[in-house]
Length: 92
Image (cartoon, rainbow, N blue to C red):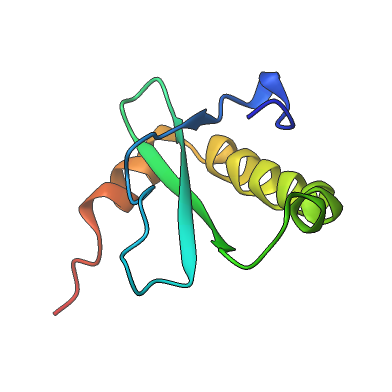
Protein backbone atom coordinates (compact mmCIF):
# COMPACT_ATOMS: atom_id res chain seq x y z
CA UNK A 1 0.00 0.00 0.00
CA UNK A 2 2.84 2.37 0.78
CA UNK A 3 4.02 2.19 -2.84
CA UNK A 4 0.63 3.24 -4.26
CA UNK A 5 -0.13 6.92 -4.81
CA UNK A 6 -2.45 8.24 -2.11
CA UNK A 7 -4.42 10.47 -4.46
CA UNK A 8 -6.13 7.77 -6.52
CA UNK A 9 -8.27 6.21 -3.82
CA UNK A 10 -7.03 2.63 -3.94
CA UNK A 11 -7.60 0.76 -0.71
CA UNK A 12 -6.52 -2.69 0.39
CA UNK A 13 -9.18 -5.36 0.77
CA UNK A 14 -7.76 -7.46 3.59
CA UNK A 15 -8.74 -11.04 4.14
CA UNK A 16 -10.11 -11.63 0.67
CA UNK A 17 -8.12 -14.58 -0.59
CA UNK A 18 -5.09 -13.55 1.42
CA UNK A 19 -4.46 -17.04 2.75
CA UNK A 20 -3.30 -19.47 0.07
CA UNK A 21 -4.72 -22.97 -0.09
CA UNK A 22 -2.32 -25.66 1.13
CA UNK A 23 -1.53 -26.67 -2.46
CA UNK A 24 -1.49 -23.11 -3.86
CA UNK A 25 1.50 -21.64 -5.63
CA UNK A 26 0.25 -18.05 -5.56
CA UNK A 27 -1.38 -15.57 -3.23
CA UNK A 28 -3.96 -13.04 -4.40
CA UNK A 29 -3.81 -9.47 -3.14
CA UNK A 30 -6.95 -7.40 -3.69
CA UNK A 31 -7.58 -3.66 -3.85
CA UNK A 32 -10.74 -1.63 -4.37
CA UNK A 33 -11.58 1.73 -5.86
CA UNK A 34 -14.97 3.37 -5.28
CA UNK A 35 -17.00 6.20 -6.72
CA UNK A 36 -19.33 8.60 -4.92
CA UNK A 37 -22.24 6.89 -6.74
CA UNK A 38 -21.58 3.72 -4.75
CA UNK A 39 -19.95 1.70 -7.50
CA UNK A 40 -16.70 -0.06 -6.75
CA UNK A 41 -14.22 -2.06 -8.73
CA UNK A 42 -12.05 -4.86 -7.39
CA UNK A 43 -8.46 -4.91 -8.60
CA UNK A 44 -6.03 -7.67 -7.87
CA UNK A 45 -2.59 -9.04 -8.36
CA UNK A 46 -1.38 -12.59 -8.06
CA UNK A 47 1.99 -13.16 -6.42
CA UNK A 48 3.91 -16.40 -6.70
CA UNK A 49 4.81 -17.85 -3.32
CA UNK A 50 8.22 -18.64 -4.83
CA UNK A 51 9.09 -14.95 -5.25
CA UNK A 52 11.43 -13.25 -2.83
CA UNK A 53 10.98 -9.77 -1.42
CA UNK A 54 13.72 -8.63 -3.82
CA UNK A 55 11.82 -10.13 -6.77
CA UNK A 56 8.65 -8.28 -5.77
CA UNK A 57 10.51 -5.03 -5.14
CA UNK A 58 12.01 -5.24 -8.62
CA UNK A 59 8.58 -5.34 -10.29
CA UNK A 60 6.86 -2.95 -7.89
CA UNK A 61 6.98 0.02 -10.32
CA UNK A 62 5.10 -2.04 -12.90
CA UNK A 63 2.55 -3.25 -10.34
CA UNK A 64 1.95 0.32 -9.15
CA UNK A 65 1.63 1.58 -12.72
CA UNK A 66 -0.90 -1.10 -13.72
CA UNK A 67 -3.04 -0.69 -10.58
CA UNK A 68 -2.92 3.12 -10.86
CA UNK A 69 -3.96 3.02 -14.52
CA UNK A 70 -6.84 0.66 -13.74
CA UNK A 71 -8.00 2.91 -10.89
CA UNK A 72 -7.82 6.01 -13.07
CA UNK A 73 -9.73 4.28 -15.86
CA UNK A 74 -12.53 3.39 -13.42
CA UNK A 75 -12.61 6.91 -11.98
CA UNK A 76 -12.75 8.44 -15.46
CA UNK A 77 -16.05 6.68 -16.14
CA UNK A 78 -19.30 8.48 -15.46
CA UNK A 79 -21.70 7.35 -12.76
CA UNK A 80 -24.05 6.24 -15.55
CA UNK A 81 -21.28 3.98 -16.89
CA UNK A 82 -20.72 2.64 -13.36
CA UNK A 83 -24.44 1.82 -13.15
CA UNK A 84 -24.23 -0.10 -16.42
CA UNK A 85 -21.20 -1.97 -15.11
CA UNK A 86 -23.12 -3.00 -11.98
CA UNK A 87 -26.05 -4.21 -14.08
CA UNK A 88 -23.87 -6.39 -16.27
CA UNK A 89 -24.91 -7.63 -19.67
CA UNK A 90 -28.61 -7.18 -20.37
CA UNK A 91 -28.58 -8.98 -23.71
CA UNK A 92 -29.85 -12.50 -23.86
